[in-house]
Amino acid sequence: MLDQRLDPVLSPYRSFSRDAWAALRRDTPMTLRPQEIARLEGFNAHLSMAEVTQIYLPLSRLLSIYVGATQKLYLAMSHFLDQHRRDGEGKVPYIIGVAGSVAVGKSTTARVLQALLARWPNTPKVDLVTTDGFLLPNAILQREGLMDKKGFPESYDLPLLLRFLTDIKAGRRPVRAPLYSHFFYDVMPDQTVEVDRPDILIVEGLNVLQTTRPPKDGKAIPFVSDFFDFSIYIDADEEVLEEWYVERFMSLRETAFQDPLSYFHRYSKLTAEEAQATALSIWRRINLPNLRDNILPTRQRADLILRKAGDHEVAEVSLRRL
Image (cartoon, rainbow, N blue to C red; front, side):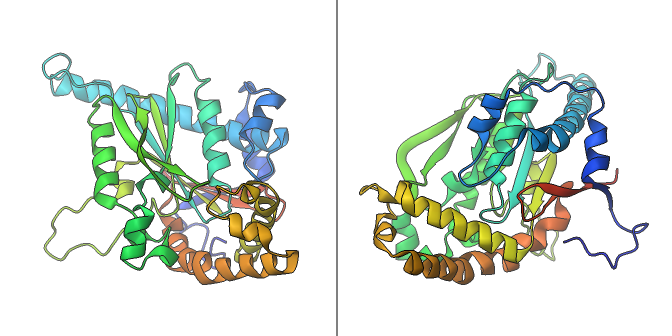
């Protein structure tokens, strides 16, 4: 939770209760039907019409304002640099980063924003990629002894991710991202996701807001977040995240894990007590250290923080001051 000991006057954020944030919707129309919202709901991640209306609709309105202003700035800069037709540079996508812990609901948030933003007239093309595709293949992780560090910063092909984002910001087309399968728990060889000059690109991942210590010689070292125009961190208490992770694991044990081809099929054979213990062990041995050491420290770098309560609903929104 945000540090309440900090004088609100000194905080870089303005905080809003759920009701105060919902009022910022103004007259923005709801463009998603209940059936569409049901399809956007993540596995074991609850999403109600009220949540979309009160939290994500105002957020889509805010982002539409940001995107529109950035589009105008880009056109003005292109005119200043006399780049309209000289170098054939294409439009530059507005990139939104979505960060947060395992099981916090990043994927659901990203999908809802994609659906809502695509309804705004100035952003008809909204693409979504996850950084899972930029994980090192399991064969490399096993060779390097990193399988238990999957999802930690060192388990990603960072140069490949940075090249992808560089190409996106350069307006190149098309750009391809590796495809990851949660079913096989690995990057799929020779399979990609194509991104072709969207108006908005949403990049979702655990560690997308992370930086390292700046070099003493001032050398330019790019970070993933350097390519973001806006960033969102989804927050919840550790004990709540643990509960959600275990609930999701137990649900998957009864569904996806039952398939013999699933990487996690072995867990489907466990008793309920064994599965519960296994889920807790994985959370406390891998996901919790990653949260504490790598993910949570990046929260204060976000432009907006969505603070979730135990019922999966956002209770507080904190927006960085301009």
